[in-house]
Image (tube, rainbow, N blue to C red):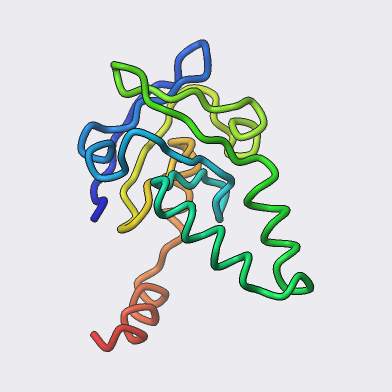
Length: 139
């Protein structure tokens, strides 16, 4: 399970560090794609194949928007010796990544956020919205 949050600076070449702890869980080959709420999703090769399969099992009439959104800009990457991955410009643009980034663990995937966008996202979470989500879990 991926947990925690890590702050980094994106380098001049567009590379972001994936925390060692996450690399151990995700493996040597990662898939990065557009995520929800303006972040990027980082999935292991196995998770990516499962994701592809689930979307592929849907009727085209229901799957095409998901296919276009998630697969059109997706890339597979291998971290270098320092744990950095190159984020394509189109994905950096989508997530608004320019300097400061936050890499978070979201249970089964990592997410890459522009740090200011991550702070804004968290500021919008209210006690009521979190309680409503916890009710779904039976807490």
